[in-house]
Structures are given as C-alpha cells and as structure tokens.
Length: 247
Image (tube, rainbow, N blue to C red):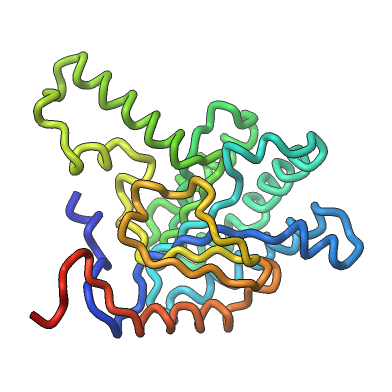
C-alpha cells in the first residue's frame, strides 16, 4: 500500500507523477474529415505512442489511458468489432517497441467479455514488459469505475465470508487493495480531451483528489506539445487535500 501514496504532494511547482487520460474525440475528428469513425480511432492509436514517449521528459512515471469502457459495447457492432481488431493490432505492432523503451504495460478492466485471442495478447504484453520501470502504461480496456468498485467489493466480501478479513477491519484503506489499480499510485492529474466536461465512470475511487483538465483538443490532435502545456499548468496549482496551506 505504500506505493499508492507516491507522487501525491501538496503545493504547487511539482509536476504530476501519474497522469490519467480520457481519450475522447476520435469519432468527431474523423467525421470532420468526411471519414468513418474507425479512421479516427486508428489516428488516436498512433497518438498514444507520442504521448508515452513524452512522459519521461515531463517527469510522468505513470500514464493511464481509457481505451474502451463498459458502456462502449452499446456502439454499433461494426465499430466495436473494429475497435477490438485495432486493439489486437496495436499490441502486436507496439509490443517490441514498448519493451525496448522500458515501458511496463498493465491492463485494467473486466476481461471476461473480451475475446480469448485479445486476452492472450494482453497477458503476453504484460509478461514481456514486467521487468520495465521507465514508464508505467496502464490501459483501461472494458473498464468502468462502478464495475471495478463492484468487483472489488465482491472480492472483499468473499474474503470476509472465508474468514480472511474481518468486517470490522474494513475501512477506506481496505478497498483499494482489491481494485484493479492496487499496485498503482492514485492519479495526480486527469485529462479529458474533446471539450466534454465529465469523467465518464473513469477511476472514480482513485481520482478523489486528482486535478482535472477538460480541454477542447480532440484526441488525435493531442500532441506532445499540448500534453506538455497541460502538465505545466498542473505545476502552477496548489493542492490542499482539504487542508489550508500556509498556516
């Protein structure tokens, strides 16, 4: 649990150690160019590499990206199938490069509904990069914050039922040990692209004290330069965590 508190310093001047991004706007970006939505998703996938590569110079050790939510299954069958194919190709294409760049990859979310071939590729990439520590890239795939908390609560209840945990010992420090992100520090900064000002069921528990940036830029246009400006703005904020600084 000690690791979960890293990078959460009060006061301004320090950059975020953990940045989480809701990558929104791929479909609108494509439609503005008269192209199908999947064209935008492919453009967005290419942008991920640039942002991951920018992290070390910006002091970002942990990057968590929202790739596919539990609600995204409501999209057309064609778009969902295209996205699943894109995820498979992304892992196959980027695996060796991620490994060479010292990126450790983790996936969070419920894997039960995902096709076995994709799950196998996810497992292989996690194993391949398990020894890396330069950047920790976490990909939220078939992820929903409420679903994650419900799954965590179910596992915790099973431990209480089995006698491995006492109900009276359950507190706000207990649940995080059962979350998908149990080995990660909480995010310092959450960014959402495309101009939408909502969190869309993303890292609900973990982002209790995160700073938020809602920016108009569509995800395929979110360059390393835009990322650097957002990170710099974070460094000028004062983070109080309920306290009054300077007293």
